Image 1 (cartoon, helix red, strand yellow):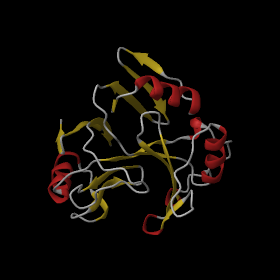
Image 2: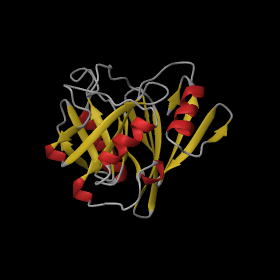
Image 3: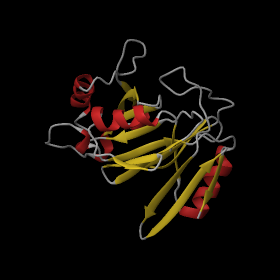
Image 4: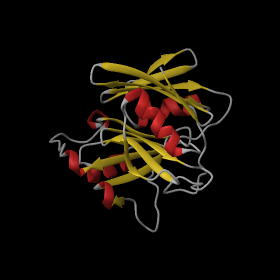
Length: 215
């Protein structure tokens, strides 16, 4: 992902989230569960929406942990936690150091309870990332044909998802759905690259300017 205020972003992930940050030339990365996440310095600001998966019995602890770490939660209609019935999931939202919309989600179907105290080492993976596209159906067909990643829930008009509960692309049509829930922040086509392993094969998925390519 790109990052405009790289100093604030490093401070956020290192000092507030507690990750071991590795610095590069105009970039940094850290390990969150079984995912490696990199941010690269950019002169242009781009807003992302992404989500971390945590054990399904740890959302209450994660709230307290965020409070102690001085990470304010995003409140909507007086609630700091959102329930998604059709996904059997609950989430809390917050901003990272560069103003991206971040999220902790628990997916109860995964039954991945933990007996450990909650901190950043309890994060299982980067679980979702926003992939705004005008033609959701065409994007899903292309990704499925290239990677075998199948559509999940939602629709092909306004808001679709592709993947499964262990990792999902949030495919929104920004001409119809203009803001990221639970904020008033406009959806942007912020570029990213993802390397995923499906069974024994690896795929590089590149998203840029609303288009997706796979190699």
